[in-house]
Length: 236
Image (cartoon, rainbow, N blue to C red; front, side, top):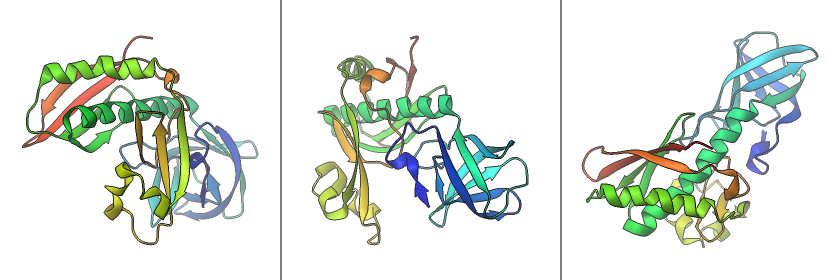
């Protein structure tokens, strides 16, 4: 299966062929625009359209290395030609949140040396988890202005699919070396010019000027050396 979003996050529609259907609702295509639920980024929603009939996609996930689309109604069969349409507003919101998350994570790491241990994007808010012993709330609040300052610089954001050996020459990627099984020959790398460069499978904007200013509205302890920061987009 070809995941079209990996090279172009801005594709909204495409054509595809149904390769298999399980239980009348789990559909595998030969290529897809749908981002599957993974890496802290929620799945895309949208439609598969066969002739004039619409099949709402309510979930997309990866199972045994293959992206499966859960449709709300039965009717698709192997060999069907379908139009693939994602809910663009939902996708674009997560693109903006995901790139903002990378910026905030880079600032936290650069300022404190903390390792980012997780993140979760949401429609109303996003969180970043990181390992840090001392929790300075004033310092964390200062990150808001620093993120917004980077957003205002209109920095380009690029996607590269690199050979494994080349990707492992990037310091921020080599730290994750053990996370990539030997059979993975290429690694997708997201670069925010002058700010951050890391392996990531998610969707991102092409320039930081597409991101609204963020607001850090909550910071909390989540156990020993585990801290969590919540942010959302302020009023545009």
